[in-house]
Every structure is written in C-alpha cells, then in structure tokens.
Figure 1: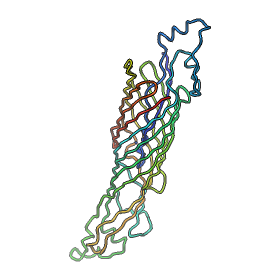
Figure 2: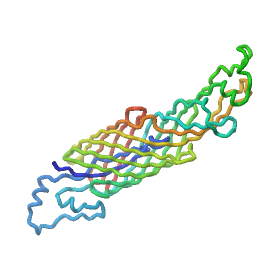
Figure 3: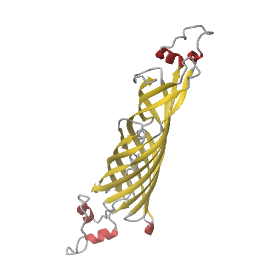
Figure 4: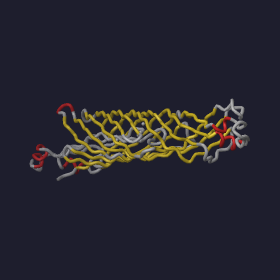
Length: 334
C-alpha cells in the first residue's frame, strides 16, 4: 500500500468559529485536493528512454516537489488565497467573576450568579497559504468579526441589600422590605466587534480516493467587549473521499470533528430596576468575567468542489454539543 502525504489548509474564521472565544472559533477548512497518484500514463512515462526530457517543477515551494513529480505524481498549485464567511451560535461557560455595584471596585462576590451566556457571531476572513512540503501546508489568516450575545444574571435581593449596607431584612414579615424576598434577574447584552488574526499548519495524507487531514490553528481576537486579547486553539481532524467529475473537476465529501479551546475576559455593565424598592434608585453593576466554550468538541461534515487547478469552493457545517455553525469559502490557487 502506498500512502502519499499532502496538505492544503485554509482557516476561516473565525473557527469567523474564538469558539472558540467570544468572537472567533478558529475553524480550519482544508480544501481536500492534492497530488494525483501515479496512473497508467505515469507508469508508462517511467519506461521512456532516459534522454526523454523530465518534467521540472518551476515553483519555489513546496520543498521536495521535484522528487514527487519524478514519481509521476501531479502536485496542485502551491500558493493559495481564500475568502471565508462563518456563521455560528453556541453557549459559553462563565467563571472568575468580579463585580462592582454603583461604581465600587470590582471584587469576587459569590452571591451574584451568571447562569448562561449565548452568543451568535459572524466573521469574514482572508487567508493566504503555501505548501511547505508536499505533506504540510502553512497559512496566515486575518479578518473581521461581530456578534450578539446574552448573559443571564441573578442577584438575591437580601444579599444585595446586605452588601450595600441597607438594613431591614432581619425584621419580621410585615416590616421586612419586599426586596429581601426577591431575586433580581436580567439579561445583559453582549454585543461586540473586532479583528482576528492567526496562523496554522495542516498535515495530511491520501491513498487513492481517500484522504485525511489534521489542521491546527492558533487565533488571536481583539474585540470591543474585552480589555485583553482572546486566544484560541483549534484542532480539526477530518477524513473523506475524492470523487472525480471528469471535466467538472473533483468533488470531495468529508466528515470529522473540531476541538476548540479558548479563553477571553469580557467586561460590561448592567442596571437592575430597583428604583421602586427600599434602595430608592436603580442599581448599576459592572462586571469582568472569563468566557470559554461550554463544549470543546463538536462534529462537522462538508463538501469541497475543486473546479480546476485555480479555483475551489467549500461548504461546511458543524453540529453537536452546544455549538452549531456554517462555513462558506472560496479559494484561488496559483
């Protein structure tokens, strides 16, 4: 059995998917096209007289390309530029909460509960890549991201009054302020925009019509809701089948999974309607909180259409766990 390694990877972003941070999940999308294994024509070419001119690889990349084509294997164009659009929705886990009321410094207050965060995001990414070796592709990505989110908040009125130094909750039922027996709740908006940039490597291999690929991407996001930059790692193993369409190019169907690890500290404010209570005015709350994906893994399926040596299109969707996403991409190979 002969296995030929290849790599041609593109990241949308995004992963475009910081699943996984607040903005960019960092989804990696390799168009699954690569070298053609030797066929009958290539085997026949090996039997030609030695004075027959050999094919010469006229590009600087990838390294070892001449050895590959000397075996009768055709390599795809080594350089690529891609444009991707990514749409996603997911739940996030919140931790390391620091809260301040009415302008007070942020501190760890255990009675403030952030139950759940939900985020919808859209990213557009530009990617440039090259084959370093016939089995390894390297790429850079940059783009814009924006999204909307909701963060559920709960604060027991009794604890809030005690923290603010407002007495009364130790009185009897008839004299006790109504706020003592209430739980204040609300949904804070998490609307953001920003930029993403990163780099990645994809190792891959093929045997006849089958292929596998292992993209690894590191993405940094700079979004409006955070004073620090978010960082995301994305590993996205996949395997599939290449089907030749004659003059129509090659259609690749594939499946796999995405592992996403990210962390981002976001900041925001929220006002509770307490003007009609014993407090006499609305209560402003500022907060700082760490956000990361609720689930690191989800599944993916996709299709890539290699139209010719210069153009390809890709459609991919992710599902499972608490994350769903859709990716559309187009690539120029030269």
